[in-house]
Image 1 (cartoon, chains in turn red, orange):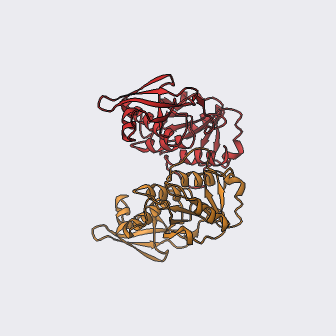
Image 2: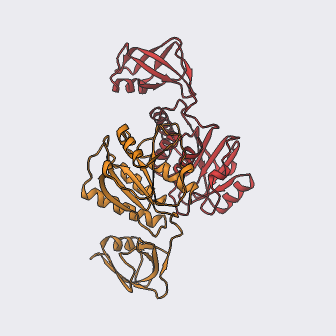
Image 3: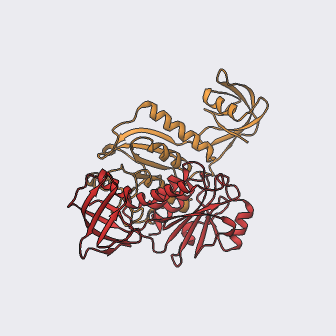
Length: 233
Length: 233
């Protein structure tokens, strides 16, 4: 059954242009059933009541008693990927893979050596759409939020913060306990500065290795989340 | 110091058009020093003797007593990534990330549900060039070989074969011993068929999980190698 994300699950659900276009591309018609999910862990079955791709509007009617909550595809504690702003389309690939690999949030960071100093509203909207699409394709019921960039020096995290750092010999599996929310931090192409690393460690962050090779800034976050996905849950 | 790959380390090394262009882009001139590596684990220092980007030829002279062997960036046993042929440019990203994450070989596979049935000579050459560039950028002295596609049904591997399989609950860290060469196998977009999985397991392969979510065919190999890089070496 095809899956479509809705703002909230209710008796009658109106879809906007994007989701309507998606149903249209799938050749769905009135009377057919779809699975809806709200990006927060709830899902249900619904029937397409009407579908107007020309005006970008569709209506779904909830199937009674079909509402459920899915947490099966989620990590034991929420995992946040905190990632430095990267140039060009690199964040697109990171957001897509991070969603597949179970990130609950993606926090964009402004760092000293960052290639990009800010991100436009349009690009942020695009990253959020990519997260939503990737959540659907990877059959997650939670869509990660892509959070507006904050400065690394003032970034506040909850729980455990692990930083990918070339100088570290500590393995991620040595520190992974799942007794608190987890944040995985990955720097920009030029790496974090010594000052930034020292400041993070003074605030309780722990450095981990991703092996003895130099990774590109877009590979490191996927490797970290891959390690979590393959070993942690 | 800039790094450049040579066919073999010797007293006088002639570079072809591609490596010459690389030195030219780096604005290197006669008399400057570079690090050379042979893609097999040996490295040395050399001096640029002459550089002719117009004819695509350069000559390097070896610095005496500088030849060494680097294995520091390599895994304890060679890791082969065996990956199904994928459509479009997806293999490019896989080869690049796999090289960064320490793969010693990349074996292309023809599988039942593969999106592509073969790969052209030009595309194979391109993948090999990408592996060479990624080896240089990740400061490896070994360049993975990208091996011509073979049918999965007749594929012979050495040592341990671990297959990413959505149905498995076994974690990669439970099976990783480094007492033999390791092959990590990842299927095509449509997954391996039941017959293929059964055949592999009958031949000694073990299935591992990459978490409870559905991964794209290009994300799974990076997640597997990321897990190895973060936990194994």
